[in-house]
Image 1 (cartoon, rainbow, N blue to C red):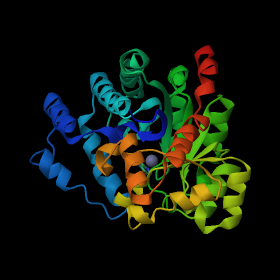
Image 2 (image 1 turned 120 degrees about the vertical axis):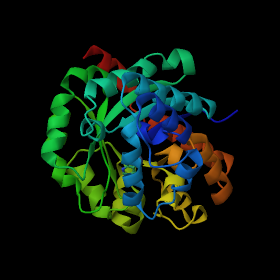
Image 3 (image 1 turned 60 degrees about the vertical axis):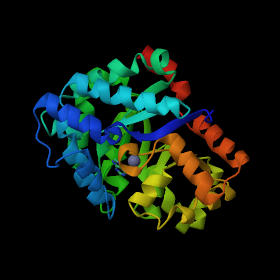
Length: 319
Ligand code: ADE
Ligand code: ZN
């Protein structure tokens, strides 16, 4: 039996497996620039975050209808459940769909069709976190938040993702202030490729309650001490870090040192269709490559619930 766990760092678009991508391409009459699923999988060799994002945004072309988003979410939830995930806080990227002419309502309502039945069908409770693309403008993020107003009863929080370097958190101060005023929870990717200062800024300027990745905090002992003192959760994604070359090899991942330092670490899958595994696969990989014992694995699973926004559910339903 896999350990029961919560998944807190999961991009739903990153769960698009090649088989489903081709099925949706056929359904929607979209031509993909790959001969077949094998050729597509063969293209999953990334040098860094940017090279991954280029392919990732391109493949989203197959996602067009509510049914597509429903099928995508259902496929993820079934896989996650099989690996012990009992609660999932799911990121989505509205701007990556709006820019292709897919309405926000199509994305949210499509995902919701799967999410509203998830506890009954998969035994997985869910929340949605709407992410802003940090390589787009702050004005675009504000417009996106505005467009989301009819759907806020479905959305728990906001996040910040996409190409990190050169796009510091401070760029999104205003939109995070507006999100907080709307009662939304706040998380942000920081310290994946970007410097430790972005983590500090995400906390101080954006009011981020969790840091997605946060890997590079280890370069700044004072920041580590602060994250420990303030119990700021970090949503680490070990297999992603290897595939996007944030670390050279899984055996060199700083997770054990981070746990030893007292950081509130969680283990997640990020974009499992691209990086070689779902939440349970990430747990298995760190156990094998880093020699984490059962106590450490149980600590990681416990941390995932501690760091979740589960208690937020009642408030959201009341909105
Ligand atoms: N979008 C999807 N996966 C991402 C990652 N690992 N970092 C930033 N943005 C992302
Ligand atoms: Zn991510």
